[in-house]
Image 1 (cartoon, rainbow, N blue to C red):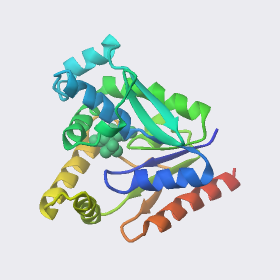
Image 2 (image 1 turned 120 degrees about the vertical axis):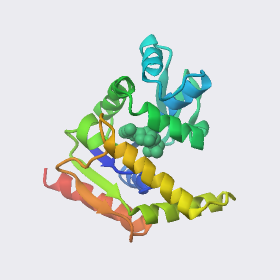
Image 3 (image 1 turned 180 degrees about the vertical axis):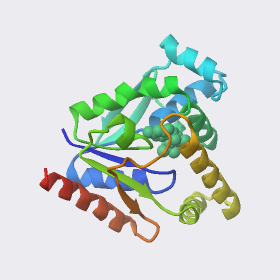
Length: 225
Ligand code: DC
């Protein structure tokens, strides 16, 4: 099986780029952030404070958090106790909760085998924060995709405006910098490039250029194997 690991900070365009690249080469695109988001959603729904390590770990250990992934026409759907919650994990509350639960070792352990198993059975492009370093250190292709905080804030504001939500650039930028800091300074699985990852900065790239860059890297890695 072939695995392409794409890691990087929030808002670098990982999911859009990875989804399009996967479609072009017929691999499954796995968005691992959705798994952390679903754990966060479970905690919120059940009145558990997502930053309460002891309570969150207890829930995970109890076996009550039942998460699954399915693919419909190549699109990933995430299931919580059999319910499709794909449309409910993109709220700001769930974003914060997912970031909090992702710092809890028990949660990472819990999601590890799910991610690992997908890559055992399918050619995958998997995106996240620790795919090249922890989940799939054996991946044939490792990419660390990034963009400047300003560029990411600009893209996020545009995205929000397209949804009819007015966004303050300064606030959005501050949120992004705060999330970057938390994700890269946490004790467990911090966001750092794998030693053998290729750094791709998308600040000055169009979406098409970024997708082509990823596909070129995949092609080069596979032809030299
Ligand atoms: O990529 P995203 O914004 O959907 O991720 C949601 C949160 O989950 C984010 O705060 C970081 C965390 N995450 C992680 O710790 N490890 C991953 N492999 C993917 C996401």
